[in-house]
Length: 135
Image (tube, rainbow, N blue to C red; front, side, top):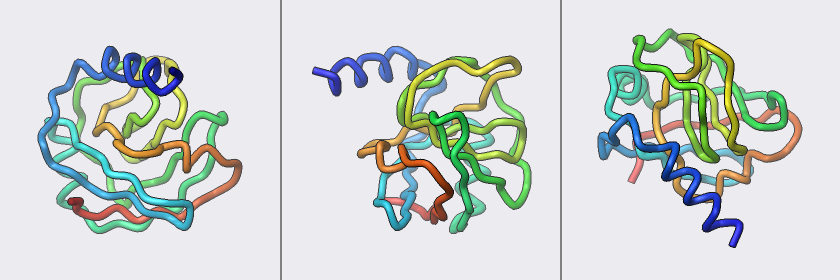
């Protein structure tokens, strides 16, 4: 029941931007998830930067955040996020949300949506992740 509610919330929040059908894989010692990227310049630039290894830290017990080696282009922002949203806070901070919620203005750029068990990131403390072109 909780998974179906989470899926419904994610679907409602994930109406824009359109998906680009490009996929990446995020791996860590905690597990692996796939991400379907959004159709925007920021997501396309992220794909060009791969493979990447990032140190990520827990923030507000809702997300893991890590600093990208270079900023991504600007794109439309939104304040709401769903479980599994891959986002961009500022121009160089990658965010993986493992809870749903809302951020203050100016909001986040949505880079993609995780498929798989994003709860692997719902742990206190830092984690090192590897982003690669996906299946």
